[in-house]
Picture 1 (cartoon, rainbow, N blue to C red):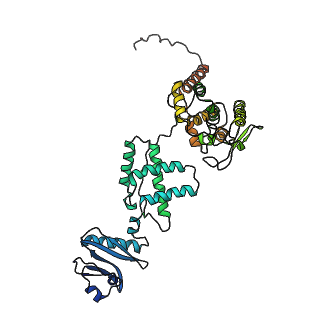
Picture 2: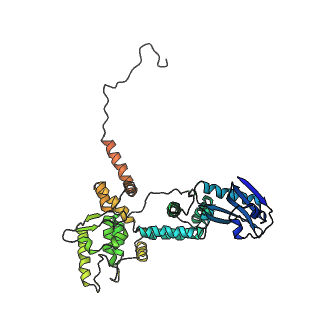
Picture 3: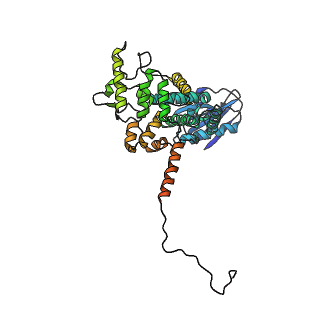
Length: 405
């Protein structure tokens, strides 16, 4: 490569003069540094005011970029870097400087909408948290140290490790989508450290606690929580349950493929208590002002059950069981089915658990379980009778030998 420097005094360069490396044209334009290879112009450095700019080509298209410096060494370094990227078949880095976090976030949410992912609301919450730190950032500015600073900030706001990891996963997905697009919007995905999570689920209901809570809840929620307690279905699955999914004559409730979180269908047979619950809901349906498709309508009877957190928390306080989650019913149902002797695979079909690793985390124990285990072990050990072959006798001392010998 042949380098030619002509005067470094700042001067605005006419556009036409930068298109090709013509010796007389170069000499007549002060403030230009031209890189040549044979008769082909590889790139050039020129001045705008006191700042040096570079110009280079990719597939015949010119790119101009400010070096944000007035030092010739900085300009040469940046120009060589860009030409190296182009020679490797990559897009020049200045292209990625134009892409911001906001664009990646919108692409990420669009992917959720296109694929009709059920966790869209969760993704939107993650994006909102990420925006607090990365909004307006250019792609090259999203680095591992910046991500670590984000983690520290979220921890300072008492966010749970699991919640932060969901947000980091969303960020990683954004960057990967940008990297996979054509043309790519992300040159490289930075390392994103994840936090350690405690996956043990601890909340569940003892039967007496459930009965006390159900008695305290208003009538429109009693059947709702009873179904949750016995089946372990998710709150969204129960609130969205419609009558066309119920066969009262056969005592069957179905969730079709695509209606569940894991997209798998599910069938549950109702026991006597749940059949009574559904019969009562059916009789109430005919008396309502509006004929709704939902099995469990809200308090006013004009829509499905949505937000009942205030009523739930108040009932928990009134019966003195502390803070409980509706999702605790899911854990409780799984545990109760296992204790009742229902095969694990069948219990998973009822609750809708797809992987056994999740199922195991829900089969939790309490102090009663531990006391029962100790009692059973003690009973077993007492039942064991040890036998020793032979006869045990006292051994005397030989005559003539002292006992101290």
